[in-house]
Length: 334
Image 1: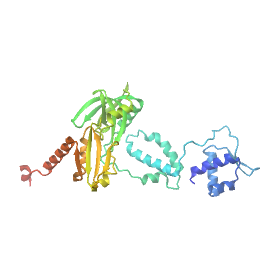
Image 2: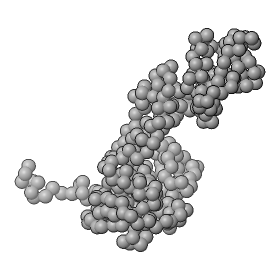
Image 3: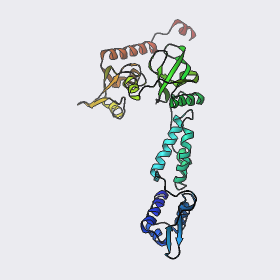
Image 4: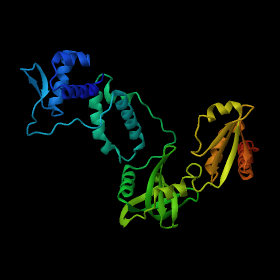
């Protein structure tokens, strides 16, 4: 029985029986005398339990509460496994929360969880040392920008910023009404209403510069509408899904792909010959093409024809790049 369960059990026994002998508590809880004394002291000193020893009845009971804080056990307590799970989640949060937006608000809970976990299992510090999260190709965001964007999102205010569009290599001024933050493949994105294009768009936080919150209310759009507009496509190149990719993986590749979720609405089946057929919706095929190519010869694009042609063109371009004849300049350099 962990310390939290013991506290609740002591409280329950005294309430049920009115008065409980010390030896009876030891028998019920199956703990040492020193541990029981510490638990009783914890109930009195930290939880303000009005526990008194009744000499006439030879046991512990609840007395009348003094003018101090009212005694009541917290409604939300956790066992050891739940505490460990929450501390692991906090470790993940530390890696995701690049700007410190959530950390300060969660820290008081973490300190309480650390005290509840105690030293029997090494505590939160030991747990953090033994949980490692590796973020590949992470694109960091400055803490100041991250916190400012988060506050604008919560306070429903607009953002004014300069945005670098990588596909066009240009920087433009934007005024955005933030709708939700999205963390995808080690990168933070903002789903927002763009007042320049008058549409819902997806913006990478690391491509934002000179971010400031302005005193204008954000255009409010329901999250259902945001999801319908941006959540149905494939990956971060979102939008309304208009096409379904049909992919067939070799039996060897199927061992891995069957465990992967490419899209929440994907459809899949194992074929009679052991191959694995996966169908995923997409609006823009750019990211889907990259995911297909990483499987090389182990995947066949059955359809649509436009996607099949796009993959074929990528493979031809790659072959021409890597197997082209050396230029005269490279010959002379050798």
